[in-house]
Structures are given as C-alpha cells and as structure tokens.
Amino acid sequence: MNEMPSGHGPARSIRVLLAEDQGMMRGALALLLGMEDDLEVVAQVAAGDVIVNAALAHRPDVALLDIELPGTSGLDAAAELRERVPGCRVLILTTFGRPGYLRRAMEAGAAGFLVKDGPVEELAAVIRRVLAGETVVDPVLAAAALSAGPSPLTARECDVLRASADGATVADIAAKLHLSESTVRNYLSAAIGKTGTRNRVEAVREARHQGWL
Image (cartoon, rainbow, N blue to C red; front, side):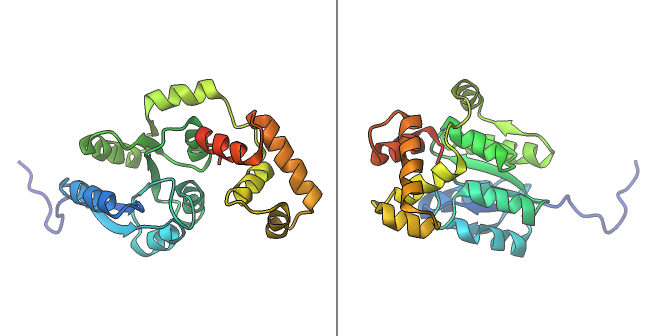
C-alpha cells in the first residue's frame, strides 16, 4: 500500500460566508454548518452592503445569502460577487419561495436557490454540489417559476416602485431618480397596469409578492 507523501494533510475545508440579518438564525446556521467535517464558516454578516468586502477579505468558496437584507439585497450582492469575486459560488437561501426571486437569482449568477424550510444536512449537501459546479434549485420553485413567466416590469418601473415604497411623493421619487415628475407618473401608471392593481401601494405589494422587486 502506498503511503501518502509527507506534507499532504487532510483536504481543505469548504470556506463559507453566511449573510443573514436575523441573529438567531445566522448563529444557528453557522453552528450547524460548522459541525460538518468539511465545512468552515469563515465570515458572518448581517447586511447586504458588506457582503462583497467580507468576501474579498475572507475569500469564501461559497456565499450563502438571504435575499431580504438591510443595505443591499442578496440578489444585488450576488451580481456584484460574480463580478468582483468570481471564484465564489453563490447559494441563495430564502424564506420566500417566489418565482420572480428565482429568476432574478439565476440572472445574477447564483448557483443555487433553496427555501429555508429544509434540513441542514440537505443544505450542506447542496453547498458541496454547487462547489462541484452544479446548479441546484428547489424543484417545486423551479416548476412555479417556469409557469409564472418573466417579470412584466422594466428595470426603470422597478426603480420607481422601489422608490415609492415608503410613501414618497412623486416629487421625492423624481428627485431621487433624476427623472421628471411626468416621467415618474408614467412609470407608476405602467407598473400599476402591468400588476393589475388599483394604485401604487397595491402595485408595490403585488410586485414584491411575485418577487419582481
């Protein structure tokens, strides 16, 4: 039997970055993943706008991102990670299994998309699979996304809906997005029509429900 050459230790652990804004959930996930022999949680963050800097500092193999985070969404962070830390595979883990979220995650370059109600052993297995080059998607959600079709909203309509979400006036939205007030009204009107709603509050709610925002 051949002996292993000296200097070759055990295989390197898979380095994981965890982005989750709920402290208890983040701590529990880190603890459970850390119990896997081949996984090491090297960074934990609670906001989306620090994900990329943490990834640059810790060089994880896999980034496990929630979608709804303070600062920047996990979907926006996923797209930025693809540009700035291309060696890091992104796995989206979310409470909200919305077809629109899945489409946006795939467009952002995510390698996987799971809903949070699965067992941690399954999550650990998926981390290994995406690192091996697979794309792993919750099958029920994948079927729903295919039947739902793409978002009818343009990027600008989404921008205007997001800007209006906190009760901002048309003038506020126009100033924030550097648009004229009439253009803002046109975008809002189009978004309300496309979402089949009666006003912009309902349009925002429906777009979020579908995962388009």
